[in-house]
Length: 299
Image (cartoon, rainbow, N blue to C red):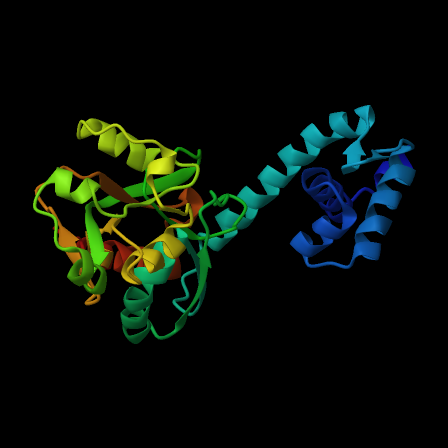
């Protein structure tokens, strides 16, 4: 048994853990950048070394057996330790050349970061950037991103964070739409227009409730939860929509409506793994983003 366990290397554990998380060999192969047969061989080798089956087939894919579940806890601990080891090594890198991976929400990636990154490329030409537009929470410890831009305070352990600014939001509509239906002077005028709502998110419903106007989902003639698509609908003239003022005020196709209305203010945070605080390349991008985003705060 001891001789068999000596053959147990990290590659087998990583493949097993990823299959357990993803639910199939194909999904694990895509995530790890390997072929499906390779991942299958890793799982088979692990089972032969341990002398137990670690997966069983079910309708929804591969499901860990009881033995597999017991091993999975240890595999996750190993993965976490390996990730931290890699971060610690990366944190000692003093070279300004290389790649920094940034993740931000889809709407920030579409409408705010392009100009910021274009300017940053001039100031930091030796740094390559990978931009990951995503409305999910990437795991910084596992290097799914080096720096995250969040509209909330990150709570992940072993992560450093910095509050950059507070970003106000506003109501906007396309000039073409307002030329056709008129410009509202009051909340009652506003509510008589077409309001673009969210599909599953009740944020706008609650906003109108706070204004003393009770509406439901059916009140909105057009609904969309994707923030980037939502803004495209607004600027195309589908009705009144809300967005960050840094986006709306920069768009010549739209006008801001009723700026005196109390609108949500979104905090802007940067986050990165704590082990990377000494990485010169990531620190340079961190500092640039912090300054650039603070300077672009709308009012």
